Each structure stands twice: as structure tokens, then as C-alpha cells.
Image (tube, rainbow, N blue to C red):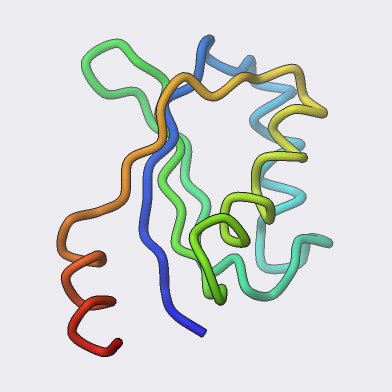
Length: 94
């Protein structure tokens, strides 16, 4: 298992109700898998961004712990970016 830190750029900014549901799902008392260590929604340069820290065996697996819930809320990911520092750490331990 590796820690993957990445950001997802969304197509639209989630409204307050959607944000509350997502934080409820991914929060410490929510039903999301324990592998989701952090899930934070922010706005950067006018774009809605989801920052994630997830423990998984692969990047694809890490994405699958987050993407279905976003899709269920009607949110679409325009871009996924892996944190360069996290990627470097992953390569060092491999």
C-alpha cells in the first residue's frame, strides 16, 4: 500500500448541500473507506478543486475510492494531478 496525494479539478463548484453530503461521506464518522485519509474541497484561481490523500495499492484504486461518490453527486472531474512530492516519495520506496 502507498499513500497517494492528488487533486481533482471539478467541472462545477458544488453547492453547499452537495459539499455537506461529500464531507459527511468522507469525514471521520462517514461511511467512506478508511483508506481515504483526507478529502478537502477548495477553490483555487476560480476552479473547484478536491484534494485527496488516500492509501491504496495503485493510483487507479485510489481514484476509485473517490470518483463514484463525486459522480453520484453529479460532479465531473476535468483533470487529475498527482502531487509531485508524493510521487517522488512513492518512487523512492518502490
